[in-house]
Length: 364
Ligand code: V47
Image: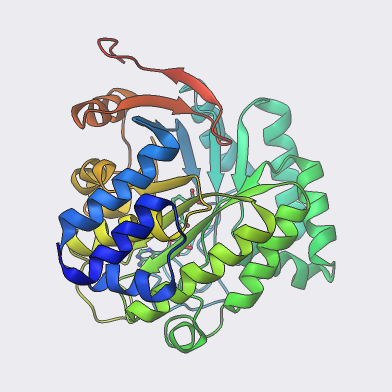
């Protein structure tokens, strides 16, 4: 083991919280086995051998976006040929498909549309809740919540109250990117600040809703800015306890304004493992197989990850940026991937209630 990792391993074994310097040393390490072993140790203490997955469906109602983030290939201006906005019926057809596929969650996020009114989103939530009761609606990034507050003039608290009343169940973790203002100004100068993202999440948690947290890596960020990002997440989680899972997102460069290659397997595994070790107040660390690929997602189950998201079905954001993965994973595929890794597959709902366990021998 690299000598610099020994004192960190002692802290991890004793359950002592890591410092930012420790996290940096882990990111700099090339002793992937040692880092993986620590992450696995921490994960097992919390989740044992259980690995969660969810039967869900992503819906992206519009790619029109008033922001022009340089890392994003999904967002479009009104005049661009690939711009689209789904009708309510198009959204509902997707929700209905999900319902018939026994999905327990709809994951709905989109661009900041220049003129769709807040009422459209409230109506969407109400209709989905009415027609497909029991399906949890996880929708709108913190960036969209801020947008709703700006277009309506309502406070964050009031926006969240109305969304919750209409059927919003929780928030996904998108839009976090990297909080460090220097990096953020280079990759998404028009987007809300990191402080604002955290402020929205604090309000969301205060309103009794859970959310996730993401970190976009593999672009122009520094290792120190990744650690800073995770530090701010850990601090907020200490205050609210409202985050359910941490999801590092691997940057995809195609059709974006950031000239970079794809991330490597080593960077992907380190990001997941360091997240698991440093974020000692997050119960779940999730591999989004769409972004890291099913192979790394499977191996990551030995690097601190306890959750693979999900059946998905249709994915537009990463695929606009050159994702090589498919868009759908079957339950049988997820179960076998988890089992092959020597773990116990557990289908969960959005709030990590167990829907079904898949003990050895049972096939999907
Ligand atoms: O907010 C945009 C990222 C996010 C690119 O909460 C890109 O459970 C890579 O947040 N390359 C949307 N990433 C996806 C997201 C998510 C996904 C799965 C699960 C959950 C969850 C959340 O994707 C955006 C942005 O951070 N993104 N462009 C790109 N070129």
